[in-house]
Length: 141
Image (tube, rainbow, N blue to C red):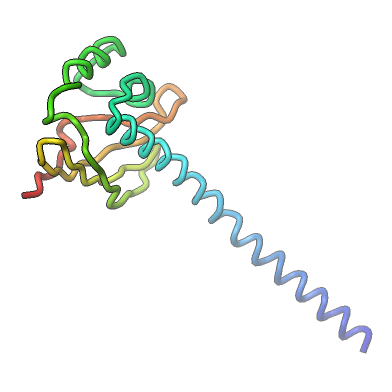
């Protein structure tokens, strides 16, 4: 009887360790996704609140070369209702080799609604949002 209890306890312990071993890699992947999504949300919130310093710090726009040019472009857009983000919804994402691509439904102050894609990846060892005007997928009517 004692051997049966010891064997049962060992099997239960082994099963628990096996389950933990299977779950750990999934937890790491979930944390990775959260890291990319966190930067995406931070960018969208900064754009919604027009926090230009944060936008420039965590994103790179293909239309500009330097941070100063990027900042100046954003300052020009500041009072343009076509550029003022009213709301957003992350509708999906897909993992790529060096980051993640997010599908985002955006609504601007002028009422325009667009489906857009943003890439979050490492640029110079820092997670950044890549902003490209050609990633506007469609306008929602």
